Image (cartoon, rainbow, N blue to C red; front, side):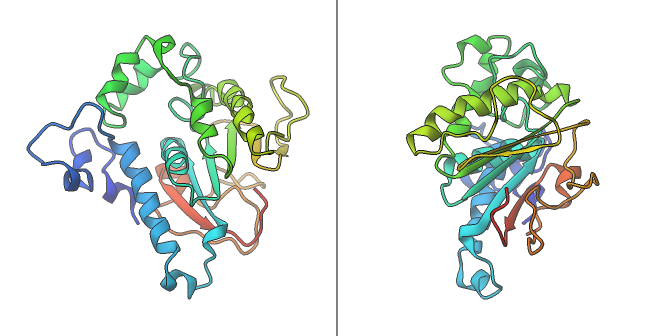
Amino acid sequence: MNAKAVAPDDAGSYRDGVINAFYPAGEDLPADAGRTISAWAWGASRAMDYLQSADAASTGIDPSKVAVIGHSRGAKAALWAGAQDPRFPVVISNNSGSTGAKLARRDSSGESISAINSQFPHWFPETYKRFSGNASALPVDQNELLALIAPGRVVVASATDDGNADPQGEFLSYLGAARVYALYGLGDTGLPSTSWPPTAGKSFRGPGMSYHLRSGGMALKTPTGTTTSAPICSSASATRASFGGPVALSGALAAVPRGGDSC
């Protein structure tokens, strides 16, 4: 599945994929209708439909060991897919930033709601624009988005120098989600403390939550430091279903059948 075929990442043509299948092409979308990010998340779930099929099973895919992963804008979509579709047992957000894992009410840190709505007006519903410059009025925050993934595993990956994504805001959101994970007996974040910053380059893993802070700027990298289209789960037998090109370059989604549980 090609994410850009589901919804082109373009303000002028984003409806040309699946969105116009749900709404008449000649009419404006409802103000609260999802745009590109929602469409990509919908596409990830349609990929999961296939990964649960007999055809996929015949290739050795185990749907109970499928992760949805995204980088940057793809990570926002991966989180939304995981929040809506409990069939994803692992949801991995890499450098998702604003309207991803970053706390929205930290609007003055990293990319603001106003900036993301201005630069990418086709990503989110029109109703989201009412919170541009008014983040304190939001009725929810992004820790609650992460919490919706429970009891599935949520993995938050940040980078020390990715100021646009506000890694501290992502970290605080991760901590905030732990209260809901605790209701499932999964509240241990794996972190030794709640102090910022945690040790960079070290993976922290609890029973239902995982966190990693990589040294450097925005990128999706292997443990050896090379840019990759593969997941940040370590597994020799892990494979990747293509979602429109390398994750680190396109911000697309990837559904990753995994041989082991190492996220």
